[in-house]
Figure 1 (tube, rainbow, N blue to C red):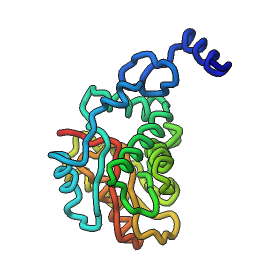
Figure 2 (cartoon, rainbow, N blue to C red):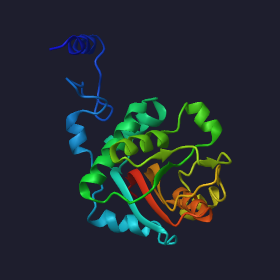
Figure 3 (spheres, rainbow, N blue to C red):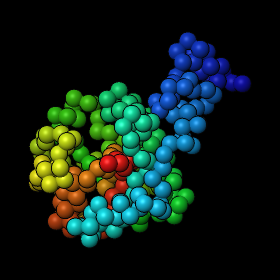
Figure 4 (cartoon, rainbow, N blue to C red):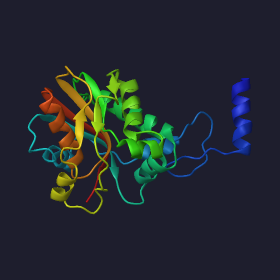
Length: 230
C-alpha cells in the first residue's frame, strides 16, 4: 500500500466520504458514486417502451435524428438525489462522472451519434452566477472525455431569465422558452449533440434545436442524463 492510499484511508476514517446516490460510505478507490449504485442505477436502455417515448418527444423537428437518455428520473429516487447534489450541493464531480458514464455506455452500445461537437444547454447569466457553474457544462465535459467528441459551453447563450418550467403544460413550457436562445458566435457545424440534465416535455431542447437549425446546423442529436417519468 503506497503513502497516497494510506493517507486516503486515514482521511476516510476521520471524514467518511459517502455515495451521493445512497449515502453508503465509499471504500477504497470508489469516488462520488459507490460501485453498487453505478451498476444498479435505473437505465433507460436502447430498447423497449422508453425508446419509443424518446423518439416521439421531437416529432415536430424532423432534423432531430435521435434522442438518448441515460437514467430514469423518479421522485425521491437515486437519480434525483444525484442531480440534486449536482445542482444544489455544489458537487461538480457528480456531473462529470454521470456524463462520462453516459458516454461510455453510448460507445459500448454502438449508439454514439456521429456528431462534430457537443453543446450544453446554457443557464442565464444570473442563475449561473448564483450557482457558480452550469451543470450541463459538467455533463458535456464528462461525455466528451468518454467519447472524444469536443464540447463547448460558449456558443449558445440564454438571453433572459425564465420562470421555472415545473407545473407548466407543454404548450406553456414552449411559450416560456420561445426565443430564449441565441448563437454567440458564427458556427460551421452541421451535426450537433445538445446535452442537458433532465428531459421532460422537451420544450427547452426543442427551442435550442430550432435556434441551431436557423444558424445552419442540419442534424441535431439530443442527449440527456435523465428521462423524467410522468
